[in-house]
Length: 126
Image (cartoon, rainbow, N blue to C red; front, side, top):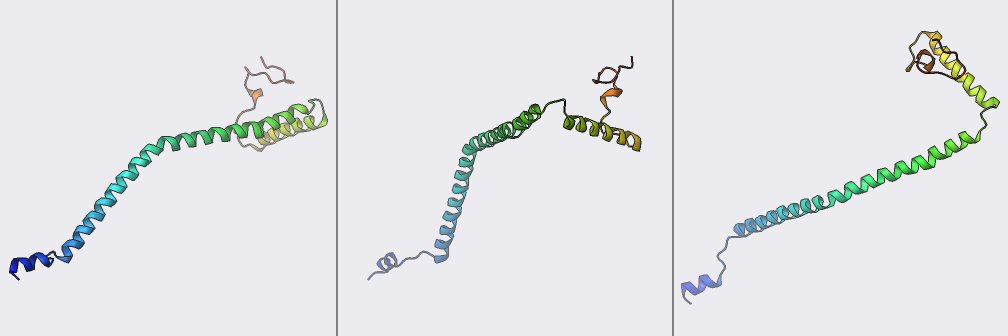
């Protein structure tokens, strides 16, 4: 056999070169996969934002009708002229007086200290 025929039959490629080419292809595939993943995330981001928005709306709606509405219903069902209501009002007044007598400043001033606000049961100062 001639020398040319022999070299054509035996592979002359370097195994390290083949490994480097394979690693290069794998790296390029990973880059392409990352770009594809980023594109998919960009496409899904509005849907995720819509889902979070809808979840927040539904949660607030459920809280308002599941907690606030029944509480107000119970509060409105209790008659206003009964010992429980009088006790709650007296307790609130006692707590307010205790804060004023202890010398600490309250978080908010009582409405009676504001001349433009009329509190039922108290005479106006002006």
